[in-house]
Amino acid sequence: MIVELSSYLDKGGDQGNPGRSFINYSRTQHKALTLQDMLVPGQESTFWLAAQEAHRGWLIDAKLAQDPGFVKQWPFQTTDNIALGQRAVLLKYDVSSIAPYALGHIELAIPYARLNGVIKPELVPARR
Image 1 (cartoon, rainbow, N blue to C red):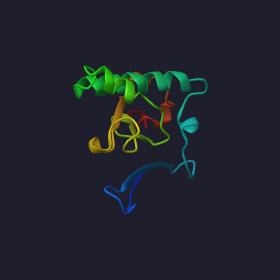
Image 2 (cartoon, helix red, strand yellow):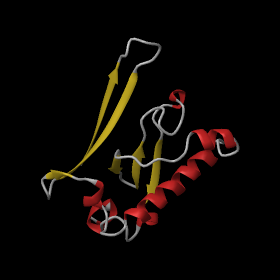
Image 3 (cartoon, rainbow, N blue to C red):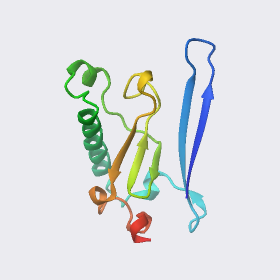
Image 4 (tube, rainbow, N blue to C red):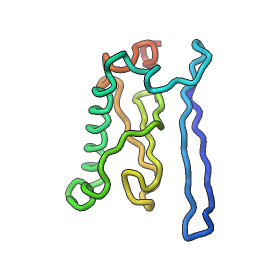
């Protein structure tokens, strides 16, 4: 079960700070899952390589990859905000983390097929 939390902190200036956070709750394990709980041991670097590929794909789709200044100013970052979606693992980023505030919360999707052997099979929705 995935819970997405949404918040908005008004800093009293031009813009507030919208927040998003995922909680992946395992009913069988009776706990919120961390990335380490989701991954096959030893696969964290492979996971983040797949996330970097998803980021590159987003840059291309958004036609931002053609702007070297954008790519340099807004590089890929890891995030703790990860969800086990129906068709893909979702990574959601805070505003102003990998793109300007005006673009909002950037969400990257990594298809489960790309994460075969990386995400524990029992956590992949199609295999449950």
